[in-house]
Length: 264
Image (cartoon, rainbow, N blue to C red; front, side, top):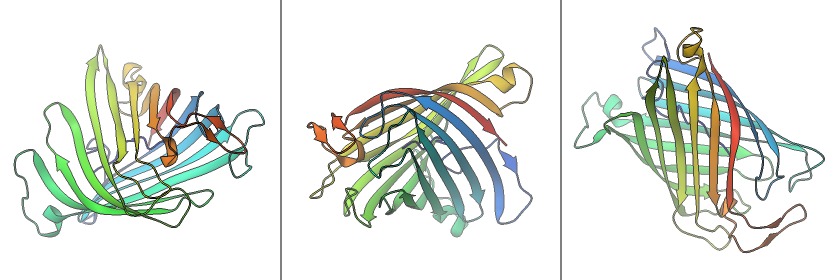
C-alpha cells in the first residue's frame, strides 16, 4: 500500500513549510489529498485507483503522521475478500527524547532520537503494531531524512509477528526553472521471516512537479507527477508462483501510478 509522503510528509521535518499553528502543544500541521491511477499491480487486482488523505504535524513532544487509502479496483476485479474496493491506513506517532527532556541529542548526522510507533489497519485482518527506535538525520541536500527501526506484532494473517522492519523516509527538492521537483517517499524493509511472513522490501518514492508554484497559484499546494512502487515479495508472500482465488503468478510488484496531490 502506498504511504506517500508521503511520504511522505512523514516526520517532523517533513513539511517545515506547512501551516504554522499558534499553540504550545501543536506546532505545525499539513494535510493533503492525493489521487493515483496505476496498472500492473500484483496479488491485488491489476488496475487500481486510489484516493489518499494524509496528515502530518509537529508537536511539543514529537510528531505525527497519519494516512488512509481508499482503493477502487477497475472493471469487475475483486480482492481476496471478494470486494471491488478496499482501504488501508497507518497511524504513526513518534515521541522525541530531545523535546521531552528539552535537550540537544544531536551527534554526528543524528539530529534527534525518538520512540517510533505505527498502527497499521485495513480490510481482511491486516492489523499490525510496530514499535522501536527512530532517528532524525541531517544529510546534506535533503529536506528531511528519518530512519525508524520497528519490531512488528500482528493480530493474524500473513503479517508475521516478531520480525524487524527498517523504514527510512526522505524528501529532496530540485529547482526546475521557475518551480521545483520534489522527490520524497519511504522504504519498508522487513529483514527476517517467521513461519508465514517472508522478508520483503517495499520501495515507494514519488517524483512531483510543483504545478502551483509554476502557475503562480501558490507554492507547495498542488503537485503532479508519478508514484513508483516496487515491492519484492509483496505482503510477505514469497515470489514462487503464488496462487489464490483471485490471483496467480509472481508477487514481485514493479509499477508506477499517475499522481495529483493537493495540500491544504
